[in-house]
Amino acid sequence: MIKENISQIEGDIGKCCIQCENNEGDIGKCRIQTNIFVTPSEVIEYLFCPRFIYFMNVLKIEQHEHKRKLVNKGRDIHILKMVCNKDYLRKKIGAIDKKIDVYLTSKKLKLVGRIDEVLFLENDEAAPLDYKYAFWEDRIYKTLRIQQTLYALLIEENFNKKVGKAFLVYVRSKNHLEEIRITENMKKEAIVIVNEIFDILNQNYFPKATKNKNKCLDCTYRNICSV
Ligand code: SF4
Image 1: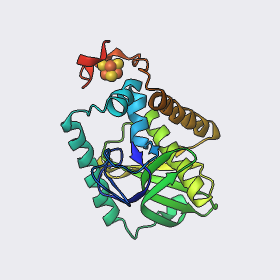
Image 2 (image 1 turned 180 degrees about the vertical axis):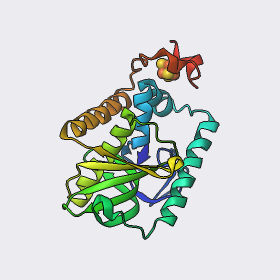
Image 3 (image 1 turned 90 degrees about the vertical axis):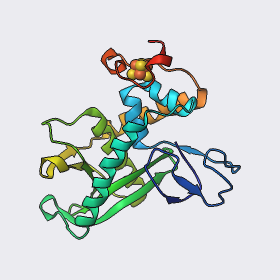
Image 4 (image 1 turned 90 degrees about the horizontal axis):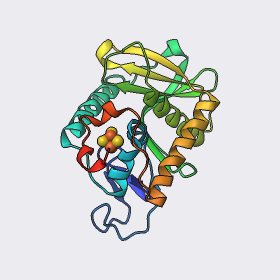
């Protein structure tokens, strides 16, 4: 969860890595009244299993440290790629301008996200571009589609531009570039998912377990989950 009154980001999105403007102590112990925002990373956790949100954000039980290290490794590559590609404009996909490492907030959706690149296209639309520290596997998982749709919603609200597509760069497959179409139905679905997460947070209810029991086999929360 991310809390409002943000002035600076100092770590991974999805973790309490921000400083309040009037910070008076540790995040989470802050005396200032704050509003909760969710991140696309948390939406991905929710899609993996709705109970993750409950364990992480209602009971405040962290996942294993090693997973965070892997995430950090991925983000290091992101930062490296962004530095390398700072001045490179992808004209082949219609980009005429871009902003890099963009942190966006939606007060309407209670959503925050950090986007590797926001591209401004020659058709007057905009699009997120995200670097993935992964191999291209000839398919795009639903979690990634939802993540990019959330970025699309953030861009639309902040830049007042329509977003109809997103781009992924698979760093470990020679920077393979993949385009995702972002439809209006996908935007509606992403908003429904964010609202489901807020239902868990606001009502503190224990959500249903994932239907895919294979996910439980090496889950951090297996011992306390009662599946
Ligand atoms: S053990 Fe299974 S149901 Fe429980 S949190 Fe983990 S993945 Fe979800």
